[in-house]
Length: 291
Image 1: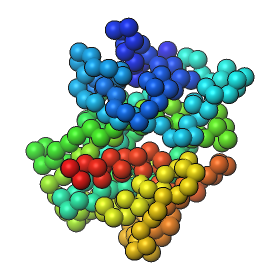
Image 2 (image 1 turned 180 degrees about the horizontal axis):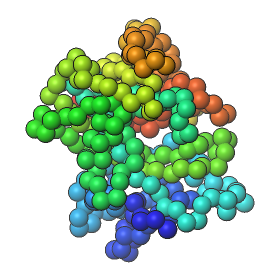
Image 3 (image 1 turned 45 degrees about the horizontal axis):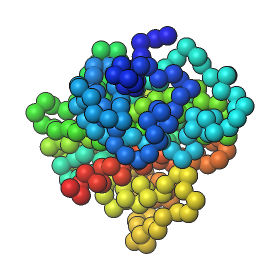
C-alpha cells in the first residue's frame, strides 16, 4: 500500500483509513468539529484532542455518500472495492479578493473525474508537501495566479469527504478523498487578480468570481435535501464569468444563475453545476465573513 495520507487516531496510535471505510462514519458522522493534525503530506484526525493537533475543523460528507450507503446495505458489493489503497488527501483554495469575492473554476468536460463541475482550484497534496504549499501550487497550476508572500493571509475552513462517482447509483466509487478547504485572503482586488489569471485549458474551461449574495443562494441548494431551502427572489438572472474557447482565447460569459443552483442528479451525467463539497465550503466561507 502507498504511504497513508489520512490517518485516524485510535488508542493513541495513528492508523491509516482503508479505501472502503467512511472517515465520517468512523468518527461518528455528525456535523461537529474534528481535531486535526495538519502534517506535511498527511492528515491525522480524531474525535478528541491529542498532542500535535493544530486545528479543530468541521468534517462532513454528502447525504448520499456511497461509502455510507455501502455500510448500510447488507451484502453490498464492497468486496469489489480496492483493498490495497487508503483514503487520499486533497486541498482546495477558496481565494478571497480584497473586495470579498471568491474564485471558482469550471473543470473541463474531458476530465475523468468530476467533469464540468464548478469548484475552487485544488487537487492532490504531494508527499512531504505542506498543505498550504499544495493549495498554492494547485492555484498556480490551474489559474496561473501566484500570490506574493506577505500579501495574503490564510485559515483552514473545513474538511469534506469526497467520492467519485458521488452516488452509489452512478456506480461503485473509484476515488476517495478527504478535501481540506483553505481560505486564502488576498490583499489584491478582484480586478487586480483577474488581470493576472491565465487558466490552464487542460483543466479549466471557465472561471468566475462569486459575491456573498449569490454564494449564499448556491450554498442553500443543499444536495440530498428532501425539500429545497427558500431562495431569495432578487437573485440576478445570470452571473458574469469568463469562458475559454477552443482556440485558447477568453470571452465573457453570462452564466445563468439557475445553472449554479442545480443539485447532484440520481443518474450519472456531466451536467454543469456546483459540486456538493464546494457548497459546503461556501457555507463555511460565509460563516467566516459573518465573524
